[in-house]
Length: 444
Image 1: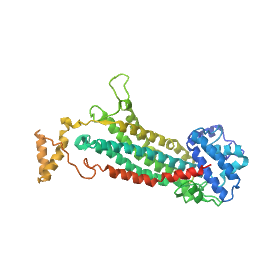
Image 2: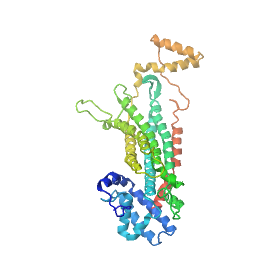
Image 3: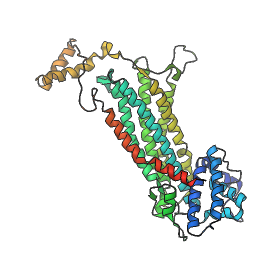
Image 4: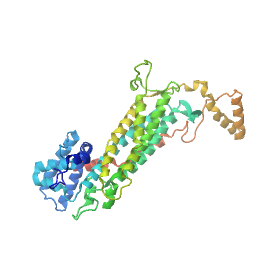
């Protein structure tokens, strides 16, 4: 029996098509549905839609359901349409008619919206932690190998001197920028749609500020029509933030695969992090980074997938939006697993300290010689021509003593400044406020 069914029973084929994978996907949302319900019934009691003695009964049962979901034992039974119906059914079985009161002033539209906001908020916090972990590993490696030079490339041609300090540190700073976009996604997520009902509010005197405070949101989604328009838009905005992180990690994975190959030999991946060949006994393949690259490239398509589902819909709710769950809900685990694997290997990578012993890299010091001559008073264009002619005559002798001092260069990485950027962004999230709000809702 569905919450909305009356006398006509939906055909089995229609039910199977319209429900799709909703029951499986709703398991992601189970404990967040309970959190939203606890806040909602607390508000209902405050405006007289629940009796004082009914509230503790409902809270007790909802907290038990939350514990079941937290353990991973929550199940949506056959014939039950979604997580909201299952929670209400469990309450009604235990408390009778009291369990049927929790839906007053609420629609499944704003119920799933608040579930998605709470779920997304929690998963953004998990992603942020995984990003920070990789960031710290990259910064540590940047400091460890800051004195070790390596070739820099343009057009995949040997260009100018770089260093492993710069290489590792560049990806750390990229993640610091990616975290800014994640913070923006968090801000848009951390607003409360509860009380918007089906998108047009309610004749009940709902206290939306109260549920906002109880759930630890920064503010409500004020306009009830906009709250419903946020379905899909919020997922798309978050997906852009996830895709930005995935882009950084995919690029890192490509570099690691290339630099680990024998033709480069710049880095060595730990043997236990590589795989072998069924025919070539010498092979040590960087499968982990190859899979990270592929999975992160898939994640970069996520915003477009969501956009194509929702971009031709007018305001209001449509069942099309259900399809977004399929690609959105699992994306967090996919990205976190890539971040965790990248952290694991980056921490254990070693670098080749003797790359520049190979004379094929001598010419990358040509700009250093041009600059040395220009600093001594020769016009830059004359210095450029002189060094170019020396190279043509095969008499160029590189000076490999690098003297870079400006901000962000080989000799002045600014890792401390980049770490402060990351810390400032981290502090603005306010994760602790959310943890306190949720813990208070679940207090015995």
